[in-house]
Amino acid sequence: MIGITQVLLVIIAVLLFGLVITIHEFGHFFTAKLCGIRVNEFAVGMGPQIVSFQKGDTLYSLRLLPIGGYCAMEGEQEDSSDERAFNRKPVWKRILVACMGAVMNIVLGLILMVIVLLQMPLMGSNVVARFEENSALQAAGIQVGDVITSIDGYAVRTDRDLQFALAILDTSGSEVLADFTVDREGQTLHFPDVKLNTVQGEDGTKSIIFDFKVMAIPKTFGTVLQKAVEDTISIVRLVWQSLFMLVTGQFGLNDLAGPVGTASAITQAASAGLESNGFAGALSNIVYIIMVITVNLGIMNLLPIPALDGGRLLFLLIEAVVRRPIPRRFEGIVTAAGFIFLMAVMVLVTFSDILRLFTGQGLGA
Image (cartoon, rainbow, N blue to C red):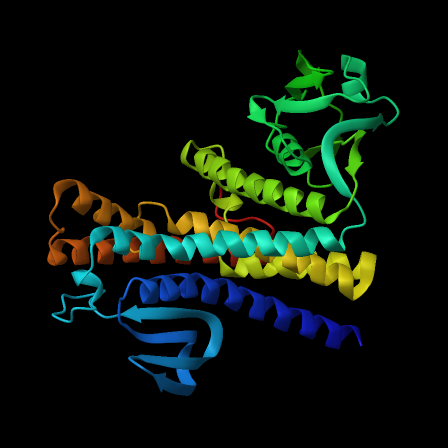
């Protein structure tokens, strides 16, 4: 029975991942339609075509592999004389179409966050509720009722911010110190160099002990919706902070995950949820990871990298400023180079994922 359950969870995870890509392409699709752009094909899935039908100018198709999809617009890749072609539309409409895939991913993330919160018995906050025995925060002078607003300069607005701010602290030294800022009845108080309690794992790495609890937020329609918005914003901030840490060298290759690593993370999360809370717990964990993935996809696609939506957006913004389009040949060369670079990174990260699965170590940091 467990085997059947795990297979079902894998199928659900694959379908949800396909939904993430499909929603992204649907953002481009419906915006293109609203802007009067001809869409030649809207495909759900990739690979061989299973079924299709024509409606107006658009071919709608379902393809075999549930790992993506695409929205093929007239005049998107090459110049077209069709009045409804992408290249013939005003630059502001093309900018809108380029952005809406990412916007839809973040909207999907918000919806999934609502689903996650509805499954949780309690919703956390950033207000200290009580301390465990020998709590480092209590010893530093932080009190019950204090609102934690910052840890080492990272703004804390939700419990997810709180968890991330503690997770990224440097634990390589003999002591783990952090600067805390709290709000106490309207007064801002600073607690520098708080020595946090840690525990050492079997692999020698240290982890911070959460020796305090935060207050629960009552669950109503309004609080769930507000918390979903706040937590989605927290995930967006987390992605940007992670990208910054990657660029500055604080994160290495071992901190990245490709398709293999992502699948492994989803499997581990599902297994943990299955053991603790059964099928509902596993499904909730999968939904949460897919929520993080869709927000990641939305943000990553807006980066000004050729072959991504952000690369096209950059060319369109340049066109808007200089009032003439970038030569298609130059754009094509840059986009192709960007695609090759992204594929090389993906191969490297995937190889690191596989190496980590078999040896416990990636290619290095």
